[in-house]
Every structure is written in structure tokens, then in C-alpha cells.
Length: 392
Image (cartoon, rainbow, N blue to C red; front, side):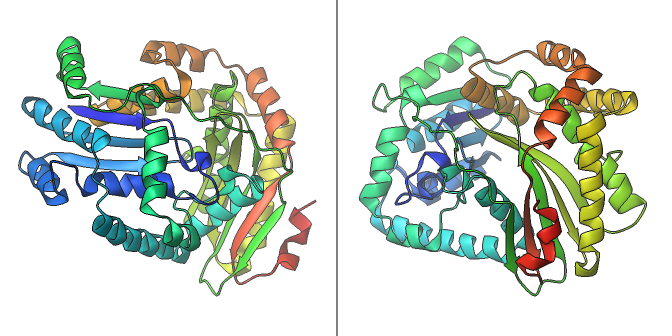
């Protein structure tokens, strides 16, 4: 079985002074509680063959445990303990501070990660959606224990959380087990958010002597609640979301210009994006970009074909079904859905929404999204002038 606490706060809800606080807490909650040392937590989970982890995004943070059904009580006991009674011991804060600073350096050294962060910082200039989830060296170094404790006290409250469980469990028993272990303050509220307003910066280039050029090109798109999000998912798959997609076939299969080329979408409470990533030899970067722009222009003008619509719908239905084959995936689906959409639609309901998308829907969404200002980010042995042709 799997259980998770989903907190409706992420990096976009931080100030410049506390940038990286959500991710810092992701690390610190596993470092011990009033009753347990970090080693006690690790040993208890290891002893039953379980798994415990967490992750941070721009809009939420999740903490979860996976154990056998017979160990549900242990899993919930530890998970509730770290959520409601973290110790925040000064020496452990300093240890994790160093770990996170190393993580930031590692992230910066990975061009494929860096180019994505460049893209979001250019798409959302002067807005927290454009900040790195990890924070930066300056903010992590300067963050005090009181800053971390204050951020935790403000955001880690029941009204800003969802608890999700999946597996061989009884609903009433699970509810009683969680209620028995609740030890946090009541109330709380979801963070107040401001939508991005500044116009995107069309180009962001970091000059590095890399063996490959890493590029991301994309636009702003639909927010997570938009009724057209299923049509956008179909557009994303046709563009670069699968082995049969236009970009995989044109860039990799037919021309061998990239090992990795794909499209991806991000959806937030009040903003979104659709973008393409490719890694290629520096001498091929313009050829790859020209191919990507050609497909973006064609989709903007014409939408997808009947075949692409059929394949994309089958892909979306199939990947959702395959993703429900273990309790961790099921827990993640219901936890995230309840937190960000305030509903947990059934598989049949989602399939019906996918099936309802028409060619005209995708054409309309393609024209709307792909007519937005394009943003290009590049990491490689280049300067801004090398890409002036793509920033009009």
C-alpha cells in the first residue's frame, strides 16, 4: 500500500528571501522528529522492505511511504510523525544545507536541466514560476532556522493538504488511523497566488563549451483547469510525446540529428507552457531548430491529422491504465488530482473526456497556443547573435 501527504505549496509560493524553502523542507522532514532520529526512520522502513521519499514542484510538495499492507500502522505512524513533529535540529539543518548546495551545483552542471530552467525563467520573467525549485546558492546559504520553521508553520496546515492512500486498505480504518495520529495545528489556508504578467523574454543563451547544444523552444499555454487541457495533451503527443510523434520521426529516426528530442507541457494554477527539448551536435543546432519550427508552424495552421488524433487518444488512455498497476501510482493520481483540481475523476470519466476531443478542438487549441510569443533557451558554445532569426 502507499500513503502520501500532498502539501499545496511549492517554489512559486516563496519570496526571494525564502526561495528554495519548500525543497529544503523536503530534505529536512526526513532528518528526524521529536521521537525519532533520521537513522531510526530509515531503519524502520528498511526493516519491512518499504520505501519513503518526497519531491517538490513549483506548486506542491509530496511526502509518501510504500509498505506492505500488514505494515500500514508503521507507515502511517512514521509519515504522520515527520509531518507534524519535525525536529529541525540545527546540526541537521546545516548538514542538509550542504547537501542542497551540492545538489544545486550538480543541477547547474547538467546542461539539459539548466536549459529547462532558462526556458522557464525567460517565459516567466520576474515571477516565482520562473525560479529554480532548488533555490540558489545565495538564498540557501542565507536561510535561517527561523525562516524554515516559519515557512513550515504557515504552509504545512491541514487546510493546505491532502492525504491519499491506495492499496489493500479499508477506508474507515485508514481514516481512523490518520485521525488518531494527527498532531498538527488545525486550520490553515492555501497560498494566495498572482498570475504572471510580464511579457516573456524571447531568448536566453548560456555560453558553455559543451559537446552538445541543448535547446528548448516553446510558448505559454493553458492553465491546469482549462477545459481544453485534453486537446492540448493530444497536440503535445502528436508534436513530440511518443515514438510516432512528428519530432521523434523527423529529427531522430529520419535524420539521426538527436538522441533525445521530445515535447512537454506544464500546467499551473494560472499559467502553462508547451515546449520542445532537443540535444544535438552544435553544428546541427540550426537544422534541428528549423525542423522544430516547421512542425510548430504546421500545427498552428492545420492542427493534427485524424491518424494523429486516434493514436494520441489511444496513448493517453493506455498510459493512464498502465500507470495504475501499482499502489504508488494510484496514490499519486488521486492525491495530485484532489489537491490541484479539487476532484478525483474516475478512469472512465477521464477516458470519456479524452474521447470527446475532436479534430476541431485540437485545431483551435493549436492555433491559440502556437500563435503565442515563442521563447528559445540554449546552452552550448554560442552567443545571442547566433539565434536572432528565431526570436521574431
